[in-house]
Length: 125
Image (cartoon, rainbow, N blue to C red; front, side, top):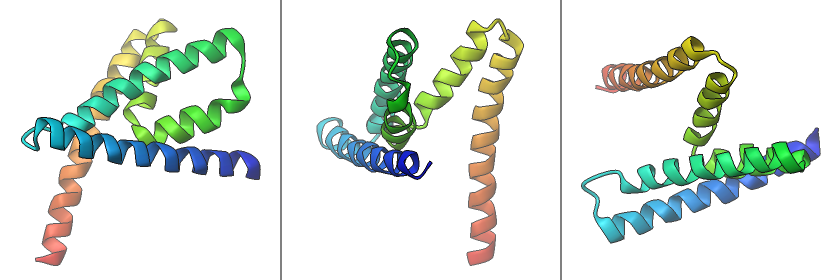
């Protein structure tokens, strides 16, 4: 258990560092008027999650899953985990649950962010 936790932490540090570098690079290359870096990590991370999940499913290597999927890709973008969960539900034929998960994740996450903004502004103002 401790080895897995250390593996996830190391992968998370790698992924978070890569995300930071992509954001810096995208900002310099494309400008700061749009969240290009976030868009890029979400797309690339989701693609890589699909590749890795399929590879592990067909070829094994599940021992590396915590390091690569939870650690590196989780640190790079949590959107990849969200994408995998949504598609897994869909592929299981749980169409309503998949749709509800997508809508709830987006609406409730944005709502929670707005609530956090408002609450913190009220407390600090």
